[in-house]
Length: 333
Image (cartoon, rainbow, N blue to C red; front, side, top):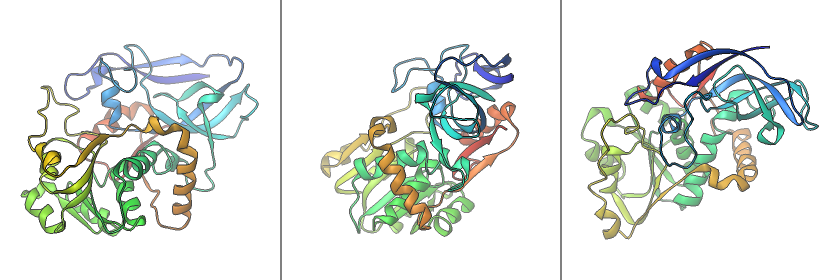
């Protein structure tokens, strides 16, 4: 069976370019014991991909030159030598950017597309949803009545963070880029307010929308927005560092937040979140979030890009241009 895959050819400096990739046509290998052949139907397009392309120490090893680009995928089982999987089963796993993937059965999770559409298992009920769940509830520890501020509020993680904050009885305020995104965050996701950072005077806008200060700040963008948020935190605030998409393609080393002394003054805590640390509790979290989806409390929509596997580069760049709303997924099959 012919398989088209995309390999990392060169490590980018700044934005990834088409020269970073090699498009390769190969045959799918024969299955060994306990392996599963998956036809990849959707790929998760994540800001973390940019970090995976860099050489150096991180929470996972970098993608090697010549290796299939790492990606989470969802698809259907074509063939299996594993007792727990049969042709026709729907699964998710780290498939890589390719049309077909051969994986060990232990690395796959069976899912039910009759409950929510298959792409939702890469978003709200996938890694981005889990990141939001553990980052907010375990690290942010919001209490009813508190103000939760979320940057990248129209993105894959931020959109779920604000919704969970509302479910837990908090006031949810988002930061997003552009009038349409802010409208989506408030009207479709149910945030109490959303600030458009592109209109300027970010601090003034945040003071108006967070008159009682910020108790939990969930950061997905870093840079100036993080620095501004630090000036508005309350005593014993919790700052959750999930990502810094504004800095991922920077050529020069980004400066640290100049307002970090606000952490001292307010006896606040800043802590990073990596979803893999919570693997033992994925099942519990997915069950609870699935319940919220069934009750209509949690939006499981995704932003699906068309074009197949060869559209990967253009789809990836949509993230860094801010062209996606919600979880970005590439349709492969």
